[in-house]
Length: 270
Length: 289
Image (cartoon, rainbow over all chains, first blue to last red):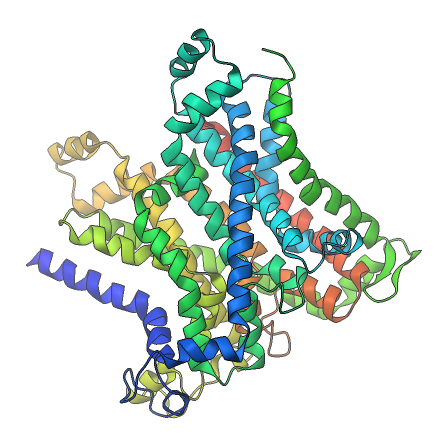
């Protein structure tokens, strides 16, 4: 009896939590006249995936999608490469200023985007990277790095030193040991970290909004975020764009839930 | 092994950090002391006049209050909700909790822009489902313009923020709950402790450090949060839901006054530093070996 009540409660809460997403999904399937009617209904007689096609003609979402992918994938690769070097240094070496460096990385993670945006905007303008995918990629890499280093530091520390020492005795160099022994062992951790980095860049809105200005460099969240203010009457296409944009995060999360949760906990309380 | 090796390994990461942390902060400091316009570029040095302009702007004080409310209330409610859900999911009643754990974490994975959009649509005054339900239940007679009303706008954004942030607290609390040794509960059971007693004397004390980390991270992240307010209300109506990060954009890129924007940035940074040091003190006891 008690179990039955708990299960019911769990389902009720789940329904409430999913409400915003379900309602957006329902909206994304309706033709416009049926979106703008009162009372609102969950279903309508002529539901279809039509808005998912129309949205690409309403705003250049195809370009936005390519841009989002390019930026997120390059930022992930770059962050992982640079981050694993730093994580390796922290996990395996004792050196002067180690605590200070850790502190700098940790603090930069707390840094509000709002307090660096003006100079970054000026800098990118000066070097000609304002409104470019490369500029946005570099900025994303920089803001993702501290957390990635922190995660990788944790993962590398968790791998026993002996494994590597054995490789060193067998004549590997330190970097070779990193590549041949440590990285394969840290692969699950790296996978989780890559997921974080990808999602971080994919979902990032603030810098993308301010550091790009033309349709050829905008990412999907900027398209959606601007669209809400300017063309808020086409709620069905807008919903379709929102759902479409949420597919990669949801799929990645579904595939890698364990790593995801573990990384989340590790990053915050390690 | 050479002594320089670790420094060489850190170098690329440091370069990036300098480029987003050190350089912008210094540049901001300089900006804040001179006239800088988005259109005309840098002008005379004017001392602290930009800071004065910020302090004399009544919107700054409003945004300051709003930011504190947004960060404190939003975080507190998210922690309570997260704890409640974590306790529910920690009751061992089979596979169902696994699936629920997945569903309950989804809001955290969704982009803040999508979250803001979805809530804005739910709260739509004419066609939103929330107004429809309230009318059907007879609680209100006509639709409320939730986001267009100065008294409700910020509260609505807080609800959306809460929806997005509680999963983080939930996951952390769940990990904390699962780390509590079973023996503590068994010993308490032998002593005849009630369920409530166990909760207050074993569960809560064991969650203390997780709660500390969550509170600080939650406050810091919400304090920095630009997205939810921008997407849902742009700070309106008439600045009623304005928060500091959105105000930086307003000063810099809407009023074209980069000097004033920089001054506000420096102020925000100062507030954040205070919070961050608190955070460091909490976690410094648990650094990885």
